[in-house]
Length: 253
Image 1 (cartoon, rainbow, N blue to C red):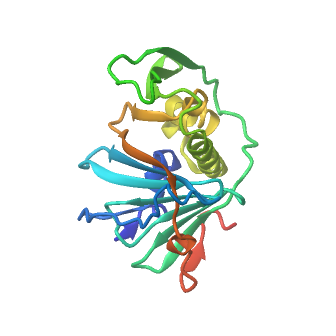
Image 2 (spheres, one colour; image 1 turned 45 degrees about the vertical axis):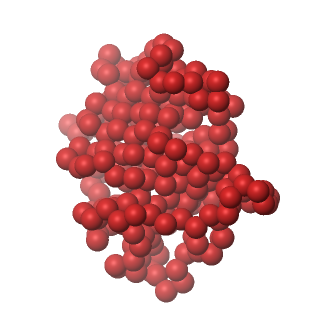
């Protein structure tokens, strides 16, 4: 198994959460030990299960545990690896067991302007194809950049898993800062209005109305929520960063 992030040339193709993880061809089952909601301690959170498809791949499963302190992610492509987002320091850690490394992304301010004008437009309509969840109706949002269809999100109202939605926004802002810091390394003819909008300058736009339970882009990426549980706890030791792994980053911070 090899981490995809160090080899990444065009940071716009990081995608969302799972692209911070490593790739693996065999999809073993994920085991995330949990204690269910009857205990309800202070560090309880939510456990979400997503199915994800990327261009050229089959669907794989992605599990995300979120509480007020962390977001912890594992997927079926990499049984021994995980991604940890420390919400207090706004730092992303992506572990690779084979190389005994931890790829680190620290928060950076986006202090650049788009290299050209980006008109990012949003349209919406009720999503009647999605059944109501907790008696709440989802809404389908479509996002266009400079007249080109970029992204779609079927989103629940803000009161649906708000802690999860906030963590996702924080995570994407850290990725957006990383993308922005390397924008000048991307050839001008590869800079695309949709990529710039979705991954840097409007990176959290599709989370502004609430948590997306289904989302997809123009290139074949798809993600949808299969299941979720609230009032779940995890032993913090499960997402402790290995002390014998080497930490590094692309931009040298």
